[in-house]
Length: 408
Image 1 (cartoon, rainbow, N blue to C red):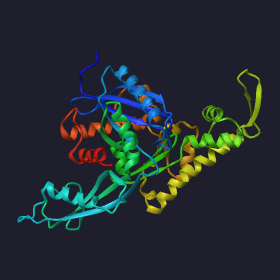
Image 2 (image 1 turned 45 degrees about the vertical axis):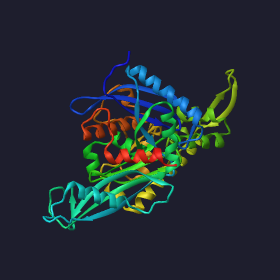
Image 3 (image 1 turned 60 degrees about the horizontal axis):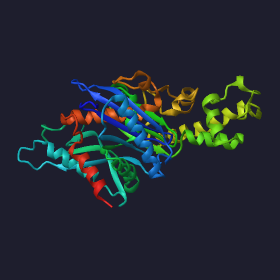
Image 4 (image 1 turned 90 degrees about the vertical axis):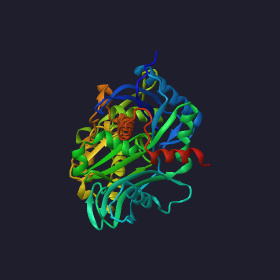
């Protein structure tokens, strides 16, 4: 029999796996993970749906497994989204204060945020997040909350994440087809950052890189707010493809070699070493040079990190990363990935672990679950905002989803 308790569910439809994480909030607002379900992902490429029917089956399998472990019935989820079509940029909006006493009210703040959202996006694009950064009142910057202050003009700096409407709607419709509601869509990079960073790291400045199977998301926090986001349509699967091509082995064998023998750097100790690959009968089939294998991996991974570094260099954000780089996602398991990060970025690099969350320890310590856990944390924040345990969407986000479901 299912428990009738308030729960929050994060659903990550990844290129390599579909993962559902179930958590329950306590009275203090903290969350406890009580169930995890996962299934091999067969209908997703580069983070986006390519086979709706197969993807639906994989989602159902992950959901059922999570329900059984947590002993709950899942009726709604916070859904992670990604893909090369997603973009992020900073923008500023303002609103004149016209009241007689010039006191800034919450409606004035909302109007400033709305003006910041009123940007000339392509008609086919849709805003996923409008994340407040800082406020200004009559030119005074660094204001956290202007409500109750006096002024003639309030301004707000925001970070906007947007993407193609139809490509965002595809995973939503698949989930709804399983009779499960989507509480909110959340950018995967934001979810991973919520999992991997504590408040001090956000204040000091940190870069979170989620190295997944088909995509790599990255988010920069500084001064406690998101400053930059990005998505690369390349990930661990591309490393496997490179190995399959370079070593002339099947894709399945390349994936196995990546996991068992791979490294992000080429150590001198492997020079001249060979691996004897056996066939299904256990007989020698092929010889692979271990140095060559690791060099192929290193070149691809360095390219991914360098693309991110170049992007941040162009925005001047590298100087703000006083807490360095945090790597999450399945790619964080690759040996020497931290050293490679330190070489490329010139900053301390660590593997991310879940913060401010309790529950299934074996799950929380695995970097590939960072996104799904972050989706749960996002849901907990929204629940706390509204003081509700089930109806979790704030007005703006609920409007966003209504548009997504009604358009087209």
